[in-house]
Length: 140
Image (tube, rainbow, N blue to C red; front, side, top):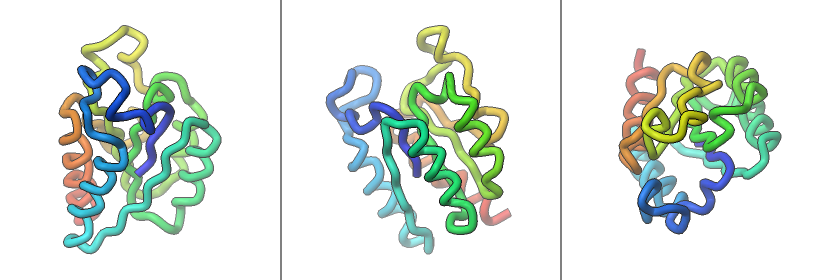
């Protein structure tokens, strides 16, 4: 799991949009759901684009999938897009809110063309749905 800028502020950042659940709580819930399936979850959060790119590079050969909530970098980072394009495993983009229902600049995802799919707008359930998608895609 990769989490981009400002996601470390979940729980206090605009709860009407992002809810009251912290990022750590989301990650622990996914870890708990993944464990009985034989999957482990490594999580990296950074407010710096380069850290996320390095994490994607590091995942090659180590991880079967990447679930990424790139935050606002979703709409601006061609460098993240290029890094994800190189990763050979399953890639799922996640958003707690529905970017298409928000400000116009959020309507474009630079990542959409290189991920298997995007799950957005379901709050914390988006992470659970992303795990389910990873499980199904790995089974294929």
